[in-house]
Length: 463
Ligand code: FAD
Image (cartoon, protein in one colour):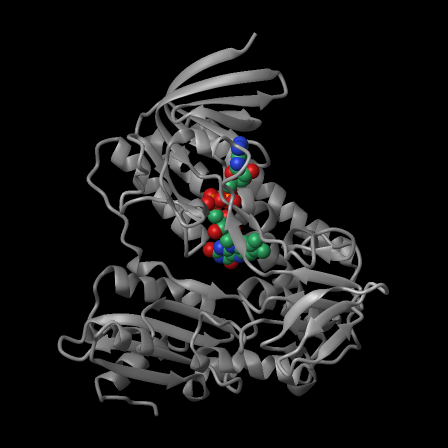
């Protein structure tokens, strides 16, 4: 017999969107049930943000150990025990997974383990180890996330892998082909190059990281060239030949074969909308995504949707922010979602951070802007971090009339940690003088943010 239970809030998916929504709802005193078919933490904690950053860190340590000669550091070439690296990464993932379980238990969220299937907007049946459980709810928060998109010419399997398999790889590929030069492909491609693999990248666009402007991507492109990563831009994968080689149609319309021992497909991610009864819920769609308003309401009363399921940017912190917001709205708070301060980072070499509008985007939006750009070659801290000579900088974009900050971007080694200051400036509605007038600690990369604001004000000190 099916076990049946009613709850105030039912959350589908225990990724960073869903588990934060459940935690916040329970904190606010709402009876909350969370359903998760895989592992708590979802894409980000289990097979995305965290494991990829762990691998990137290990690759940095390996590359740094091999390249210390200029600083007088020797000691021979480092060796790599990849099984140990992956085990270390898995330890971090396990720690975070059980941390989330602990947080949910402490907040008194009921976690139901199993795959849910909705029969109508407020009813689902979960296939649990102990048999089917039917759940009904006053409010449903959908946070089913996303999955990697396979290429029709290159289905996953055998040597064709997604980021999930790349993060659990048992031996270092001698030659890795990466399909897609977006942030996931480049982050992983660069990490594997640092670990010693030969890397070839195939991208249909004419340049790497097509969502970012050229000024920001140029230092990354330079790193790829310097480190002999082969790039095929404006090129199209056509399949695999009889000898298991990747076949590519190049920009010059030539046919190319690439003998790679692993082919990592990072051609995009799509919302997970199939296989759990979405069609039975009567929601409106916006293209492939579930359609929502600025409070994450769907077309069905008291059914909410958040995170990767609802559209770009498909980022963890956006999912969590939407999750917490929805819980608060259900509890009676007045909230709406403002995406202005959702920054994005590429953990490439060097790193890129982008918050708000670039100069071109601001101009296209009808703004007359002033910009300030401070190069890390003029930063003492960047010099001490060997981060001064890769062409990195901080750039600030402000409205000319009232000096309101519209965007802040940076590229350079270690700039990911500046993202908080950029997001804060946008969230607070800062003007240039707020940033220029903040006393930034010396010596830090953050000083470049204050200097960029001074430059935009025409009062630059150090360039
Ligand atoms: P998810 O994290 O995908 O969670 C959805 C959950 O729902 C899953 O656990 C799934 O098992 C569960 N689920 C789905 N359907 C059902 C069902 N029917 N029944 C029960 N459970 C179900 N973002 C960043 O911000 N920074 C990064 O550095 C970053 N790096 C990334 C690196 C990689 C390699 C990848 C793949 C992604 C990365 N992302 C990064 C993106 C980030 O992981 C996602 O934006 C984020 O996980 C979205 O959260 P979510 O809660 O919407 O969905």
